[in-house]
Image (cartoon, rainbow, N blue to C red; front, side):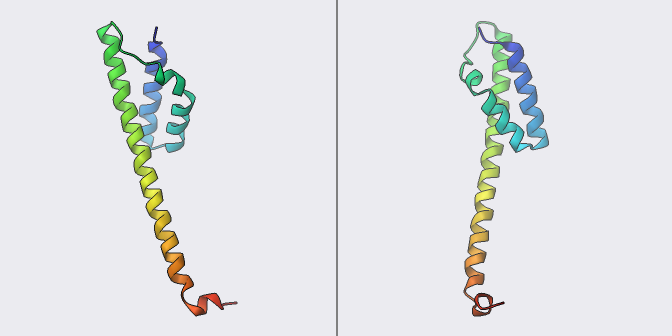
Length: 97
């Protein structure tokens, strides 16, 4: 049997972390509750299924936020490396004391 109170608590915490754009908190919540998340299955009660659907939407939003942040970090890292390579071409920089 799925613990609906835990699901509700997790959903609320995840939603607040999304609002705050707290990436570390989102990752921690998902990591700490990974086993629980994988046990979620449809229930016979329609109200419980609505809570599950709501959690799925929140989880998808959190996952997308993590992907977007990761992509932005990759882009910034690429720009940093590109700039470093461009700067190192100048002899004055290499020979600077």
